Structure formats: structure tokens, C-alpha cells
Length: 352
Image (cartoon, rainbow, N blue to C red; front, side, top):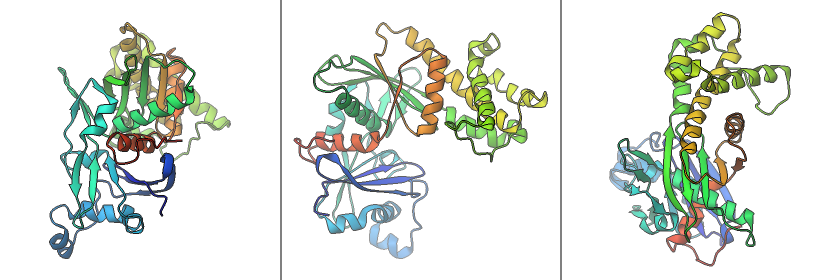
């Protein structure tokens, strides 16, 4: 435990991931719990009296890393995600973009536990426009991905001026970063509720009635059934490029049912077709927005679940957005980088 340099938390709505990080940013140990901010431990009257109004957060915090902190006091603590929202432990107000990423770690909010520990919370970002946009947690992944990409390029290669970072998921984000200046700057981002809409359509509309939802589909496996599912997924991806697709996603999603009724797709094929359909519409809009840019991204990075990123990489290739790579462990790297910015760990400690 004497190697512990930082306790880092990725605390979202439904889950909490904890990292015990050592010298040079090496993750020594990690845990995943189901105690997101909407699923906190049950608070007893005794807990309430001892810990106060935010007792649920402190109980979850102790479950996640209490033993680590007891064995290695006083270790600095940093947290990102929905823990800093209005519904979280302590609100960390949004910072407006554009913003240089080295400014984010200098504006952490703090909350103190009942026994005097200080938790530093990363603020989210807001994009003020006619239709405002926000992120909370993704900014940390972006910072981590940029750090990993810089290391992979090496010291002797030129930096990349414009980077596009995709974060597929429940609410997919596409973040544009400009690196021409000394410090990378987050310039713009878009949000697509693709994952949440997919789940809602499957579970709560007539489209799901004829789907086969329990069949496992290994996106990378080469089997006859997977080949059929791949074809259904690719068929959905292509729709946004067709004449019929110009009517928009609200028009095309009903084809998930009609292709089943006409025996063009079986139950699992309908599920994969709908996934491709929604992702295809998302990538079609992304491509159109990129075509309007004066400076095209020179690097495209995907962050997230490997299987989901594989789906998105397939979609990007079909829509002729080439060269995307997938980055892992961006969250823990981002938390380490933010801790360095905030002076919580040594500025000379270089992550590996």
C-alpha cells in the first residue's frame, strides 16, 4: 500500500469504478461496484445521524476505497462523472468551452467526508448555443485519450493539430479537439442518444415484439449466425445513405418491423438491423458536419466498450471516415492527468 499515490473514482449514474494508482500512473488495483449515484447503499437512521444528508454517498465511497485509504493515509482522492452533478455528492459547475484541457484540473470542487478526507471532483463541460450541450465524465476520458495518443506518437513525431474523439454509448459524444496551440483545446462536441433510444425501442415499442433479444452475438466471431447478423447490421448502417433514408430516422425505424413481417430478417436480425440503422443515421450526420469544417481531423479516436467501438468503426468505414483507432484505459489515465494538473500528485510523475 505504500506505493499508492492516488485514489481515483469514475462515479456515474449506475456504477462506480475505483482505481488505486501508484507511481508513474500505474493502476495497482481496481474495483467495479453497482453503487452509482442513483443506486446508493441503503441509509439507516444511525447512518443518517452519523454522516448527515449525504450519507449514501459516503457509504458508497467507503465501500469502494475505504480499506485502501485506511492502509495508505493520506492519499489524495479525485472523482469524475455524475458525482459532480446536481444530484451528486457535491455539484461541480460546468465549465464553458472552448477550453484548454490544462485548465480543467485547476478548477476542481471539493467535498469533505465526516472523518476529514477531501474528495476532489472534476467539473463537467457546457457548450452554450441555441441548443446547449453538456458532458460530465467524458472530458476526463478525452484528456486521457489525448495523453495516450501523444505517447504513442512519440517525442520525435509532429503533433496532430485536429483530433476527433468518439465516445459511443448510451449518449454518444463526438468531441473535436484542436492542438495547434501549446495546449490541446476542446472546441466543440455533439451528443447522440443512440444507445438509449435503441434500448427504449427494443423494450418499450412494437419493434421489440418480434425481436430475439437473448441471442448472444459476438461481433468478432466468424460463424454462420454471426455472418447473418453482420449482414443485418450492415444493412441498417447503409439506410441513411439511401433515398428512403433522407426521410430521417423517425421514418426509417419502422422498417425494422416490416422487414421482419416480410421474412427479410429473423428475430436477431431485426435487433442487429435496428442497431445499424440508428448508428448509421448518427454517423451520416457526423459526416455531414465534418464536411463543413475547414480543417479536417487528422486523427480519430474511439473510447469505450470494445465491441461497441467495433460497431462504430465498421460504420465509420462504410461512411468513408477512415483511420479510426480504439483507445483503452482512457478514464484512469485522464484522472491521473487531472490530478497532476491539480497538484495532487507530483508534476514529475509521468504516466506509463
